[in-house]
Length: 255
Ligand code: ADP
Ligand code: MG
Image (cartoon, rainbow, N blue to C red):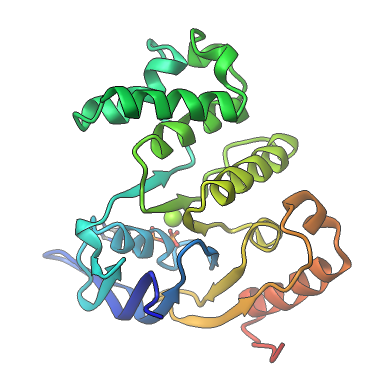
């Protein structure tokens, strides 16, 4: 079967008149439909660059990306970032419909779908509230629903929980993971948090320092799909040791 996402020999160099920054080196990665992938790597190694290439926002210097058999730039992707970028002067309902409105897709059917998402994921009673009235976690959920309302083919998540306090982070990551899985979305999460990667993803891709190369791709073989259960699974501790060593000591274990 053709992979849903295919990155082939991707390298990227940022160039301007004065300097060159070599960000990615020969990245090859295949992702199946519905898979949840986490990408971990040192700060500044090229993780966001990789997501920008996956989203079609930047063309790689070398190599090709296809999503669902088409070039990445033709694919509908949803982005979830560290900041929710909700409009403070608009209600949660209005924020949830914003993407549809901007893209001229606010049909009755799409509006109904956005409301279904708000209801399904516990935000219905906050429809008329403003973002300032919501907790950081709820805001992130509202931002996710705004994105899902556009029915993206793939979700790209760039350190989406890193602005949240630790407790909130655990519950929001768990909820976001569940929502993405129950909507059957293919997801690529970039994080510097090893435990977050282990608890959410089917596969963890470990990148080297810049220019990022793939050091290792691991199938995370934990029994539960529930991220909170996975955090306390003894197997998660073993994975943490392996990934920590690969990331910070550069040694690659043959697990
Ligand atoms: P990460 O997300 O892993 O922290 P990035 O992909 O943001 O890393 O950046 C990788 C490298 O590319 C860094 O050295 C960064 O300074 C550089 N970089 C990122 N974006 C640009 C850009 N638009 N122009 C030039 N250099 C960039
Ligand atoms: Mg980044």
